[in-house]
Length: 100
Image 1 (spheres, helix red, strand yellow):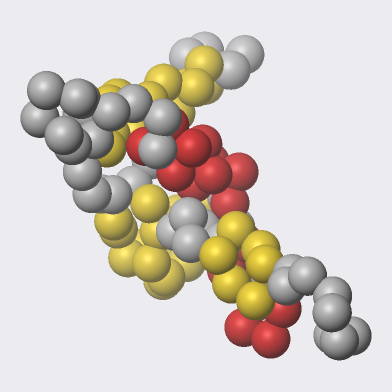
Image 2 (cartoon, one colour):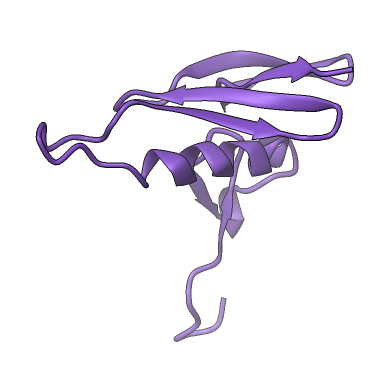
């Protein structure tokens, strides 16, 4: 990285950010879904309790929908299966429901 350049970070499957030196393709699987969870987790705030509000996220698509929950912490899983392939890694829990 050139001097004075801004840092480059990538969102990975568990919703955290990694610099270029620590990033790999495996860590980015389903990062779009985790990005939505992190985004909605930082949106609501319960002023009466001075804390993040409990939120259920629903992302409806043509053939499926993703459901996730945030209650002050992320629900984390350590094994995911995508297209029949099992990956062992830290990830945000997202439940995909087929609509067809």
